[in-house]
Image (cartoon, rainbow, N blue to C red; front, side):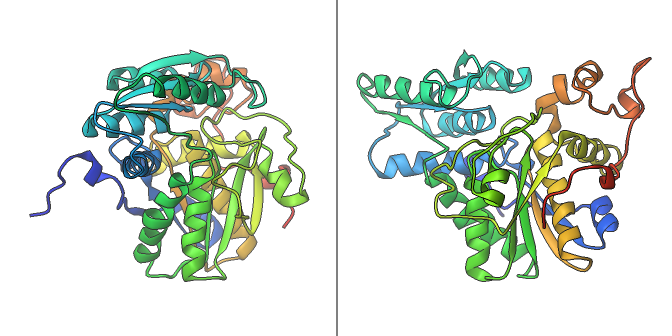
Length: 354
């Protein structure tokens, strides 16, 4: 018998799923790593586990201690569930703009949730910086220790993907892959998987799919951290080079507008039964861009990061979509709303230099 002794043992070893529409559209084999099948329903479970285990090894966290983090939601959920299983409590600082579903899940899991205004990282009240100060304060009073998970600059995050996700992708494809692409929140997933794959195949092409409003596309294409536009996508989009990104650069970067990514989300649900969040749509759109860059016959892997149910009140809300000027799928239509759209005709969209 194969038995997992708790959720910690169940993290990772997620399947690869061939994405039928994207593959047929490009003449490539496009595969999605189904990270939404982790116990906490996102790719962030891996980073959460590695961050906690790293703190334990360093003696900074003992049973009954506290884990503090600033997060858009998924890392907080992963930390809380793993923390519950290992005997820790969690204090999560989240921007108030994040989805109600993620906040509800954090409260349901037992986290102490602190909502703060969504302000830039340069502001001392930014959720990440706020959580760092809070962790420092708690560490002075908690008898069993209190750590700041610090997912953006804590390279245990990246190491999780160097040691697990990357080798899993290599094994599952039997080394027959030509490219990997995903978006960046902390940078741990892209840098970790990219590093692991390059160690095994130096000529593999690693790509970044960056939303509007993020600065990394500009940085990797021009050397300047410059952000333009905005995106409804939660949990991805970065304005600085985090600790997890230091020393790493993708081979190519694509800037993906919501008008390109969101229809992919709807199509994956309606025609392939995959209910995913907007970052997964961003990732699959990036995989399509990379496939077009490489040409037919290549194998490309991306990340299916989390379930779409975590964003139901926004991503699958016709009123919200219309207010943002985004397409509404036919099965969500209301009177006077625009009709659904399929994968957009990208000839009408700005394309990344290649």
